Amino acid sequence: MRDFIITEAKSEEAVLVGLITRQQSEAQSREYLDELDFLSRTAGVHPVQRFTQRIDQAHPVTFVGKGKLEEIRLYVEEQEIGLVIFDDELTPKQLRNIEAVLKVKILDRTSLILDIFAARATTAYAKMQVELAQYRYMLPRLTRLWTHLERQRGGVGMRGPGETQLETDKRLIQDRIAHLKEELKVIDRQMSMQRKNRGKLVRVALVGYTNVGKSTLMNVLSKSEVFAENKLFATLDTTVRKVIVHNLPFLLSDTVGFIRKLPTELIESFKSTLDEVREADLLLHVVDIAHPNFEEHIQVVSTTLSEIMAGEQKPVILVFNKIDAFTYEEKQADDLSERTQRNVSRAELEASWMAQLGESGCVFISARTGEGIEQLKQRLYDSVKEIHVQRFPYNDFLFQDYSAEAEELAAEDHA
Image 1 (cartoon, rainbow, N blue to C red):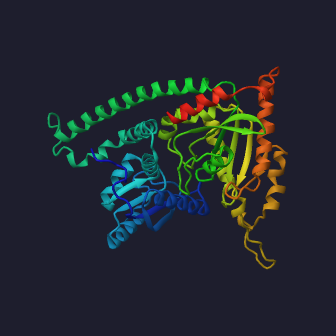
Image 2 (cartoon, helix red, strand yellow):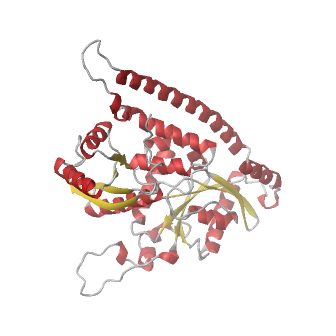
Image 3 (cartoon, rainbow, N blue to C red):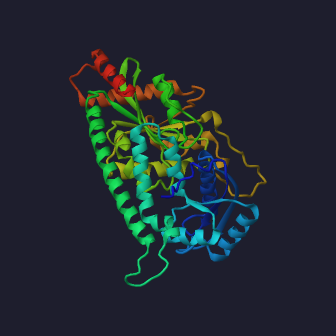
């Protein structure tokens, strides 16, 4: 079976394609393509050109209009480009028709993210989760993958080897999906028991958009060496560490980052990883304040969290990270252009909607330089202490011995 991911084609050049629609403005389309560019480079691909089209909605047959598709075909042929990446998930029909015209490898946003996840997965558990997501994505697209075996003649009794192979392959994939689900259920039960055995320590989970600095912050707070890199989805496996602030211990977990248009296959496959978020007592929502569209990132994460937790409300502290990288462009008096997020100072931001969050609602830090870390630790101490006292009103937690639980947690991490 042909593998649809691009691991074997590192450093190849690619063309990116996006849409400007009634639901997606030109500025949003440009931002999404910037993110697709970052995703591509994370996967080892070098984007050399972008194509956008203003259209009411994606064309049901070819995603873009036939004229735009012909324009892309001419460019791809002239520049000898072997890969075209689309910014939305393509239907099997769209994939089939686009490949027939362009005659090069076609990827959509979902398959690109799946490829990055496949490259980033290190543990057997994460690899199984990614494999399950890939098979779920692949199953409805098998007809495209087996076009070289399509039957040559139609009619009753004239079914060729292509159709037989297709049906056989569907059964193989369905069997593999069922097998992976059973294996993951066993591991999920084991991880659930591990979470229960962690004792009565308060659990804090780091959540946020991908590449906002969660793992770097984890390293600072826990004084550990969790893998951190300036690439998307550097963290796939959930990491749990014991953290002590002012003699108060709690568990801190680092989870996979969210992103716009996160494939549903991945949300389903990474259920157990997201259980760390679902079962946390307190969420640290890390935000890259230096990103020009950080407010939209906050909304994406909040929407995903509400889906994961089915409306359950948890206390959240907004942690605005990367204040050392925050810049803004002050508008001149004679500048009549529209004011954008880039023209808003940090002081103005803090005095706007952020001021309504209250004293315990947000904190500003730089995990890289250490600025604001002490304020964050105090905020964590106050919040964790409040949760613990509410849970155990007659328990003097300051004098409890957590050494046995810490040893068990360390053993789990090493395992």
